Amino acid sequence: MKVNGTHYRSIWYDSADDTVRIIDQRWLPHVFKIETLKSLESFATAIADMWVRGAPLIGATAAYGLAEEMRRDPSDGALNRAWEVLHDTRPTAINLRWALDRCRNHLQPLPTSQRADAAMRLAHEIADEDVEINRMIGVHGLEIVKQIATSKTDGEPVRLLTHCNAGWLATVDWGTATSPMYHAADAGIPIHVWVDETRPRNQGALTAWEVGSHGISHAYITDNAGGHLMQHGMVDMVITGTDRTTARGDVCNKIGTYLKALAAHDNGVPFYVALPSPTIDWTVQDGVKEIPIEERGGREVSHVQGILADGSIGEAQVSPQGSPVGNPAFDVTPARLVTGLITERGVCEASPEGLTSLFPERAAA
Image 1 (cartoon, rainbow, N blue to C red):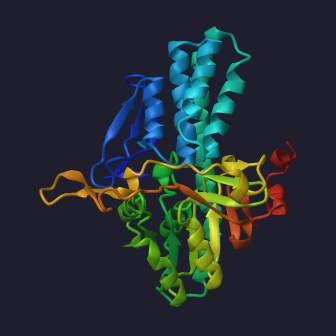
Image 2 (cartoon, helix red, strand yellow):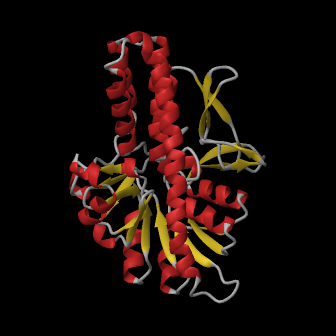
Image 3 (cartoon, rainbow, N blue to C red):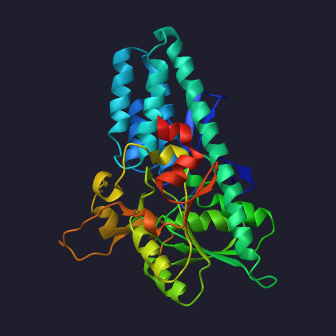
């Protein structure tokens, strides 16, 4: 997407100096910074410390990190060590393991002399695939928005509510939950987006920054406001992303997603999940019991980052001094609460039959 008129991906290879660059999301939405990643350790740090975030982007970043290590040392030992170092950064998003397995399986049979070039080509391929997957999610999601728009009076917007940032900053480009928004806006369909702040880390601010940059009407709201808006008929559709989806359609996403699904179910509001197929974990059935939930540091909850009175960016503590803090980063929304899954191959129900109908070859494998 564009930032100040210039198109950016969230991660890209700069052929001018043969390096990989990212948008450093620690400083957004206040400051736009670009960071160069040069070593396996820098890629691992970028993932673990959330310089990059979002399941698809984590996968692409891991692929580039492994490719960078292959240029330094293409041996089997280095390949396996790179897989381990990158895999251990974050446990919940399945795209990380998916990308690393794909890279290692592709590279292991090759002579070491070919691995560096092959690894970088595959990283480019994974990134390009992600862009197309997300573009197609937008194409299929647009049809849902169009259908809702037909019930509106002239000029009345379709009102969407989203949680966290499933935007182009969480992918390589387009985003998952935001892709239908961008397609709708580009098609001239009036929409308004309710953007949950999404504590901790307030990742909704990234979504607000994104859609605002695209000229989309939106409002940044507290996490607890969504149910109220639904009760008063002010939400036409909820759409979120996902970090891991089970074979039966349970959806693991940023903490708080489950509560939005419950509110949507109680108020008859359709709840859709934008689902790139690499986030499907075909080995898992029961998301609540089987998906590991990352427990992150308490400082993300006890402190908030923002612009201080003097214009600088800093942190402020919001919790009582000495109070213990819990920080589960994700929760699981059972399939029964999901109206539909919007994938690059179309829209299906959240069920084994629905997923198998769109991805029969993967379900069989």
